[in-house]
Length: 640
Image 1: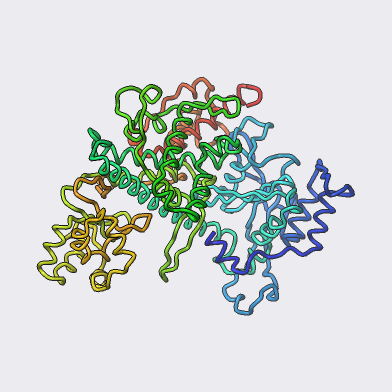
Image 2: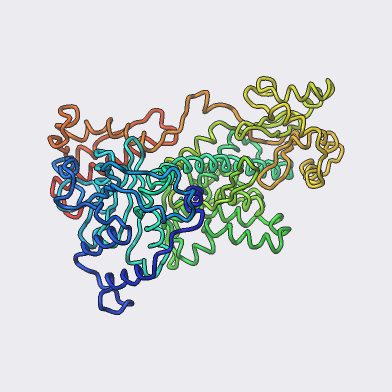
């Protein structure tokens, strides 16, 4: 979204009314607009849309006009992939296309023939995500076009049957991405045609700044997506800290009976598990893998709608949410439903089993001991308030970015497009932390995200006795407090210590000390150094509390985030020799490769001894699934 806002600061380019009228005439013909007919051949419509609507005109080359370098195509597994057309601009759009003369500076000028978009025109009714049934190769049209992009070093392709217009971004050495417009929705959803023209009009290629070409925007978007992943990882970690603190407070209010016999590390593992359960549920619900349209599921189990209902209640009566724990019970109930299924005439959820959602893995979350099972042993779940759950869901669903100017940019996250690898990266960000028990009062101080120090109050008081200058020097020295974890620079620390404590922070400090005003008075000199939790409360951990701190385990073990494109490359080069005979171990010519039998592929066993979050195993699963379909096709198995 930030990339689009920058590139289209004034909004999308509106489509002229005459183009909309001609679209309706061409799409619906002489029939009534409400009863659309499906043309068997949409070649003329595709040609009109590309040449006239997108203004590609004579720069859109087809048939015999295709350059020799493209006409030969690229061969893979006895299949030759040849684009049906190419957009190859040779001129710059007129200056009067721009609103301001200054916009002309830095425009792209194509003086040489350069292919910018490969076009693959399919038969009407062909979904670009489908696999062709005319050959044995199991790759989809999207995969074939991506392979062609990389072979010809043209990062963009447009795959279309005249209804689906799918833009494929497949830069050499990068991951593949795509987005689809539907011509059948141009009349009812006017923004569809506006966005297609804004993104792929000729002036976007040849008369715009180099940073604003479609290729550049998509490359920038990938970098922005990495920023989104990092920010989500940070917010999930903070949500985990909030949950651990909520569990610890509940245990203290019950005189330590809730966590009796439970180690701090197990508390942290349980909190991480609840976070990952929630992330997986959001992904599943937004991809319709759970019955989100069922009213009973929405009312009783859905996570996606829980935040909105809690948010509405918080506006009316936040005091009730502070004492109520029904949202936490709902998360536990949904975990049970996914693990063991729901079998009712009005709602059906299959039992998925597995370790992640197992209610007996951390029975203390439900107020049970390890004796018995969740079906037989009653329990009273740990009282995590609805306001805590709301703060956790806000952290998972709303990303907050703070710019250098201090402005906070808020973005609603859609889990529909969160990759499995991104979920793995989020999980790996949690491996650098663990839970410990305090021996003294400990303060959570500000610092670099993920590396904030936690320091015992007596230690801070001892440093202050030596004078404020000594305290400032110590807190700003990354090797003095905790290696690599300082509060800030010397100027930042001096500023925080010199500022007066505002009323809101002083009030929060009293709450954090559970009414112990003498303790609050001891902490007040350091109050502005305290970081706040997701509910804007100062982080003060009382004696005997369980809290989260950085351990460096992930860094020390060398664990690193594996990107999707790297994981897929590792999987392909490792598994191809096992799936083909002859194969890459025999010849580099893929046309001579022969797929092994489906039985041989199904008999393979894959082990990743350094599995981490499973990115390479997921890539291996994808690759083997594709080769299995290839083998079925070669064996003549129907409907595969």
